[in-house]
Length: 306
Image (cartoon, rainbow, N blue to C red; front, side, top):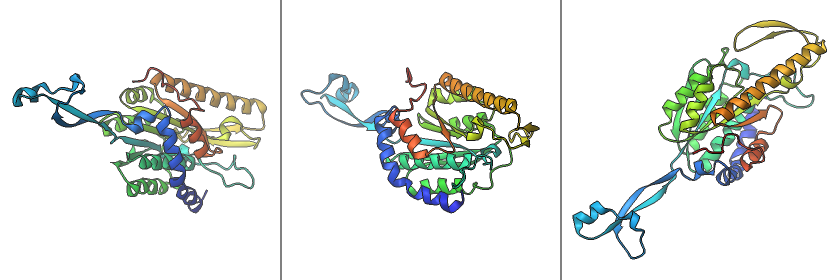
């Protein structure tokens, strides 16, 4: 997909995000967007009918008359998008559907990130982002407003077509996110999860924050076409193999390997307490997110979460 088409889609998202934000508010993550608690507002004199548990005994002792503490809902929250810009997020020509414009893993990830950022903006939350490959490449500190949202999206667009040529260290990115977030927030991890050794870090982040893991998949993961003898390279490790895609045994082994990785990823997300969503490059990102936040795709790890 070229930059013009990607921008065209993104320009429609502020309208779509209005409905998506409402779904988030009434769904499993509603508490994150509505407010995570209450904070002190002011003290006033006690009136008949006030809850005696709210009496400020210290103020009463100083002034000789009873006072009560008033609180208000805390709404100033943070949404952080953790976006994978590593080499494996690029596209390929094998899964292009004739008559359609192909969407790479990264482009689909960017579309999902933009929707979430606009939804956070719609509900008046602070939003930030962290882009990573082997290292954390760029950080957008959480802020409010359309200017901040567009700055993050523009920053992400600048990587389109020129992704990193390195693998990814998701674990380090999750540690960095934990250091950036000072209080309970919503962290959205968007990646193909081809990295290794991130399980402990995901669990640590999930204990302190609400976490959604969005795994970007490709139809090639499920079905390798019969394309003859191919030279295949793992963008994470640089290892190359010759693939005889004309053999059904090779194509079957390819599918089984990807199925096992997907099942392991889902299991690790559940164990960490992170909600998860698999998003194909051929799916409508907006529709998939709508279903997810409506609960039609049940978020994992929500039972018993604090």
